[in-house]
Amino acid sequence: MKLAAANQKLDAIIEKVEKKGLSASKLIDDLKELREYALKEQDPLVTKVLRLSYEFIGERNAFDVQAQFEEDEEGNEYPIEIDDKENFLYLLNLLKAADHKINREEIKDYRSALKMELY
Image (cartoon, rainbow, N blue to C red; front, side):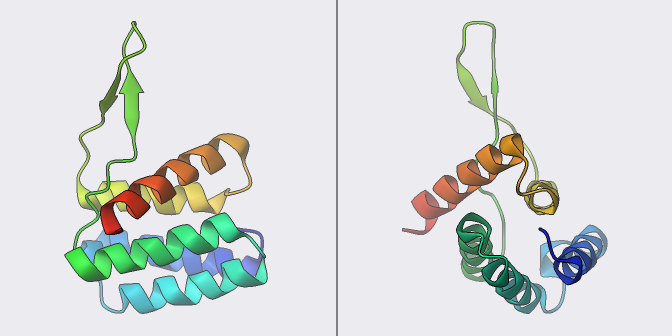
């Protein structure tokens, strides 16, 4: 994220999730507020993934989205087993440098996985 206020909000959300997990109070409200910053930054990918994330957490009280994969020597992809909290923290940390090429690709993977799960 580009705005200093957005990064401060993102850091506060990360700290909250690290301490209390997905059950942190007002997590969805915090994500909605962070989404407003993404709207101001005119970043449709981040805006969408934040909305999908808080909808997913709101519906399921979890973040068991399968968006991370590893490849073996033959090019076969396997899902990485990761708990909800760490999975969500990984996504939030990607958002810190959302304009980085590799991070954007991974954020797109999360967006696709969230859309498949929700719709």
